[in-house]
Amino acid sequence: MPDYPNSIASKLPTVGTTIFTVMSKLANENNAINLSQGFPDFSCSEELIELVNKYMRAGNNQYAPMPGVMALREIIAQKTEELYSAKYNPETEITITAGATQAIYTAITAMIKDDDEVIIFEPAYDCYQPAIELNGGKTIFLQLKPPVYSIDWDEVRKIITHRTKMIIINSPHNPTGSIMTASDLTKLEQLTKNTDIIIVSDEVYEHIIFDGYEHQSVARFPKLAERSFIVSSFGKTFHTTGWKMGYCIAPRNLMAEFRKVHQFLVFACNTPIQYALADFLKNKKNYQELGSFYQKKRDLFIKLVKGSKFSLVPAAGTYFQLLKYNKITDEKDSDFAIRLTKEFGVASVPISVFYHETIDNKVLRFCFAKKEETLEKAVEILCKIE
Image (cartoon, rainbow, N blue to C red; front, top):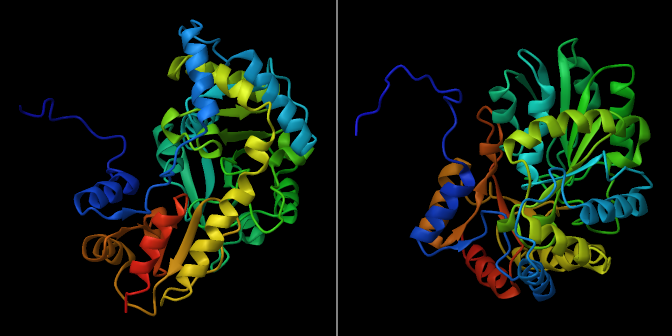
């Protein structure tokens, strides 16, 4: 069929298929171990599945309230206060979303107008820039400082202008596994004081943090929280990425604008799953023990990789580990990732794709949210690469 009309101009002319889709497809085609896309290869809780089934059978299969099931919003408010000493009104300041990506897109759409500037930190998760551009905004890029991928706040100060409308932060950070400290958020609070700058804080890995560190949520900082949308994910927390369930918390005035957009994007989210999550969250161990659960996997992965030519800085959070391969080859990271998948049978993600321009530090991202036998088999292969 011909492509009509020929006059259509793409709103995202430089955007193609996401790297996660590309590498997962390549992994499937080559029967490779898929450590590229960020999803577990183990099951979620049987109890959670039974709860969803229970609420489906009970007839909770029609539209949920637009902001989300109240029981779920109430327990999120309770959890947020207990963890971060921050009070949010479940009636007016918490909204359930169809995953974190939808929440981020909604927050950006609610706030960004033509020519507004939005600061993001690279390497950056790939959904930020397209959402900014679709809403007429201009993305301002600032690179994190390897090898620990920290923020230079003096550089941030220099690029803030009268057009700066939003700053997007992400901690624990995908793809690098770095975390923001209390000092980082204090500096951000100072930089945005007496401005109209809005913060979008992507905190989907809030419960996956290691080595005794505490997650520094924006919610812990009252003056920062009053200008912030905080985004979280049930998919990352409960090994259910395919359910696409998340939430956003924000002060009443910001949430009012968020909901204006939300109601016309999805209106409401999966009803029986919301009821099930409300029950499941009552057992705090279901999220409090997540950090230690994944630290065991991170530690196993790191221990096994020590026998290879790859080098690393241990991830402080998320379920991703970066491996530097400069001792193996000087190939571009995208080329090496493809060769690693096709010739060796292990799929990863090249970090250069998380930058808007070519930045190749010879680093690949591997997902360790896998069964022990999967990790052992994958790293056995990596250790044989010369």
